[in-house]
Image (cartoon, one colour):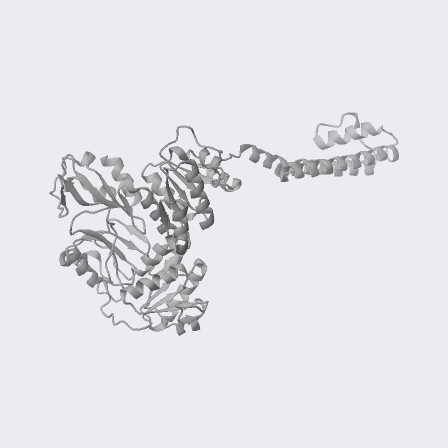
Length: 544
């Protein structure tokens, strides 16, 4: 018996008891006070008339005070009982009748879609990417309430068990482009094994939380194994190491000597405090500034009056030599490495990856963690000032927070900023919604695990679309010239109309990267553009 049924039964039993009680009282009162006895059935009929407010007929006048008081109390009780039934019984009944339930299977016509098994925060980013490219998807969620909630929110979801053959068949896995297993490591391997039973040929992508378990996902038959925490650690470490962090992979080449890179501006750099126009970046280095992150918000293209500070990360394109020249300008003018210059707080999977990357780059570091184990230099709490002092935060140039709790990260950021106002704070966020709070607390650079892993999954799945997703909110896309053919880049004014930047033009086997406003786009050209999700969508709507 569900909650509504129990509530209804209790209400009916209680109401019947109250009405019978009043019937007995009315029967007695008519005899004792009015000297006008009624049969018990007539008394019951009177109580029903009173409770339902349908009228009193011949019993509409009483001479005794006692009977009048009894009828008044009876009337009040009846009205209260009826109004009580509205929120307790009727409203929930209407809500239940109007509730929409997630279906148990997809439409027969659905094909070439992505099957997402379980829905996590990174799934939101993945779904956003898929919708950007008009790729159909279906979420297979075994929990009924969770599936119904997702369905109400507008997601394409079915309520089925992804670990069962029947459940994956209900998602039409046989006609799908790929499957994403995004639960725990054990459940993911089970889903991959089940997928192989349904269709040996379907591409499977499995998320691994513990990198040392990746081989078991391979043995289960996964075509690709994604390790979000390792990627997050590498991305965080790249903000400290001195190498240029290029963002294009081997499968996405623009030119022999041309690349795109993310370059964070460090505290102490001569660029801090200048505007983009004053910085002389274009004139002195020759790079093209595609966009920039200002406290986690991506702007493409940034205006000439955009002010650069220690939290700014530039997204630029150019040759290796040009990128190296800009890199030297983004670094602090004082970079004498010493032990403790970089403090890594948290030594889980992400923290260990960060430490490994720093060691490879030759950057000295100190590790602070609550647990005493190999690789930890200082045992302590990231939220305690004394423990942070012991790790050398007061003299550090950079602190990387690799904590699994966003609340601890926010508090630790406040403490660190108090201990060392000039230190560079790089933070990991578990949930995307907490990124802004961390910037508000004083972090200089924040990466969300959900965003990084979601885009990593999208990049793995959409490899045929030639899209490379960065750690944040920008995409590099190769697309047809479309309606741009016949116009010069200056006439098209792509930047101001869409927020996207044309990085290169591929024409007859050659790649043009030195693009001025007079370059004319020809029919058959392929364009390489960079922009946000919304910008790329707008570019597609206008020019394709």
